Length: 308
Ligand SMILES: [Zn+2]
Image 1: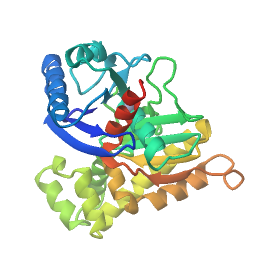
Image 2 (image 1 turned 90 degrees about the horizontal axis):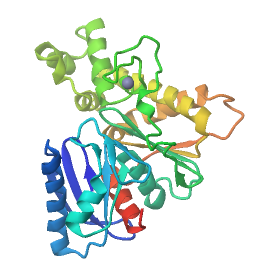
Image 3 (image 1 turned 180 degrees about the vertical axis):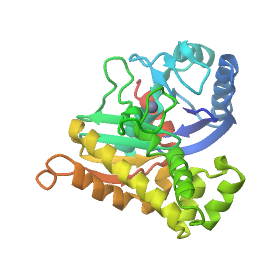
Image 4 (image 1 turned 60 degrees about the horizontal axis):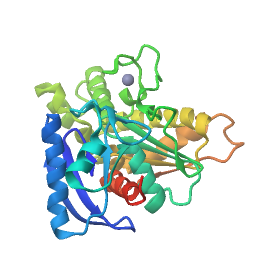
């Protein structure tokens, strides 16, 4: 299952990583209702398939033993022993994992990072989520919260971030960032973009990342400039992370990756120029995810099937 801030998605996954059947519900706001929704979704799918174990991919911090959720900004759980509670209700083994960790596992087992020893997944959506495999194993840090890439500070005194800091990577490289950049550009160059200009005149919040991407695809120069800005920051951030982990492959996932043809080549160029020792070291391959938005679900299922 993939437990996100907006929806709870369940899938029956076989040993080859194929999703055979799915169920979906909006994410309830209380702890009890959220767990009811999970139990219900598994129950529905278990009527049609033989379910042997349950993996929960969670948008939040999971303890190193994969039994509890420490903190999840968009979910009701706080220091909650979720795995044991759900397991008791379903009489099935249950394992938890951070969603980006689950996604990188899935891409490694079944998708774009197959065969890589050091693989990094960067999920670009509302913010940035990161998952890292070192020597083929998940790197979760000492306390289970690594790698928190989105809040690496890239720009001194930059855009304020809800995390309390400013200039965080995800403020410049995410769907939210696309929208912020487009709004800034529209203020500087009014009248340059007819489509987005009309949107911003009615309501600034109407300029979503998705709309900027669509406008860029339609050839809107201002939207394309916002996209180029995102590409620069993606390359910049990747060069920074590559200096620490030296990955073999970087998998770009998340909603924004659907617009990869609009920014990925540019991002690669920036990365190549910025990484330390450029020209004298092998570079990570940068490619898009293969499993799409089912990666976290598939990874969690695969972990559960292998006993965590
Ligand atoms: Zn931040």
